[in-house]
Length: 478
Ligand SMILES: Nc1ncnc2c1ncn2[C@@H]1O[C@H](COP(=O)(O)OP(=O)(O)O)[C@@H](O)[C@H]1O
Ligand SMILES: [Mg+2]
Image (cartoon, rainbow, N blue to C red; front, side):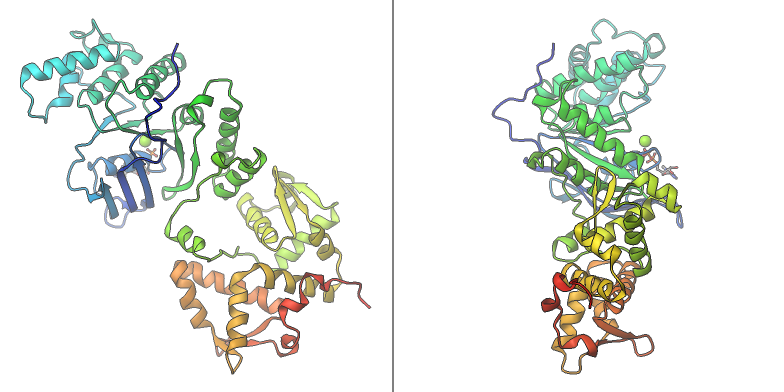
């Protein structure tokens, strides 16, 4: 039996030195090729096992090859212990899905091949290869040829050839997926024991897989990849090693969360993960870490992303929910309203931002405020909307403050757009602005003149400041 425990003296996974990192790595093949990777930023630290989970074709193997220095990124940087990578990354060895063995070489020769580019003498190579073969359970197969071996044994050769170089970092590209289930499970457990007991000198592992259970069983940290082009959707902490046994509730819960994320390729993965973390009792250890992409950084710096939803759709959705009893699950909603899952989620996100709707366990339901909004007559509806927007939407607050501060009470939209472009890409910045115009106008916080491109404070509502109107506006109408 394998004892799943780390040595007490080890640093906690994820706190060690950064051995390898990518910064905003992009890749397209060919001159005008479609992008395969878009702005991938990640770190691999000493002592950690990271899994990269994602649909096929999302660029996972390409990313590994870039990190290994076998392929050049089109843009962005790979850093090895903080220094830009040039040429092949000598710290890395790779285990491939299809074993990549030479059929005309024996097991021993295939393993020795891993040492081809080292300065070792032939006898040293032999000694190292023999040790690796022993370690990985291939003793007695030294002189066998690959065609004589089962899939599991072939992959053991793949592991031995990678481990023989005693790499600081081990990459595994779907290492168990070509094996039948039991063989894969067996090899995985053996490898896991070697890793956890530090039988191998490898300091960090990065494994690509499309098998959720495999990622959860092995990894300290899981990066979920999305496709078209490949990017990291969310980063999730793994289950602590002490709770990684097959019957662990924590493991099952994480598998479930990741399953949901992966079956909803267009959903907000961070939101799903956060929701799951809350459902699990809000344990800090389970909190998903937001990706520190440029956009996430700007969000952390105080920018909020306004969902691209028109006031009409937003209002219509809240009223619809009110009309069907105040709650509905997302799949029913998608079906009944004939909207795509991702559009629906953006709609829910917008309503959630204004505190009209809450989402729990895939059920959207109206808050007290949302119920009032759904039932309100136009005047009260506007007042509630104005209060919600003034309270929750930082971009609209920014515009109204600037308008109040300006002696002329006018403001060029271009100024706002310039601000937004610090945080968002141009297209997205423009969309943010348009949403703010739509919402702010409806809320009667400001007017916007399309021709001059200027905001003006809505004179009629200027005197009563937005704050004093507050959420309490919704008293009985006369
Ligand atoms: N050398 C290459 N030339 C052109 N396209 C490539 C090359 N390598 C990979 N691709 C394309 O990049 C995309 C991602 O491939 P890959 O990295 O293998 O994805 P994954 O490992 O996630 O399945 C695919 O569309 C694939 O066709
Ligand atoms: Mg692949």
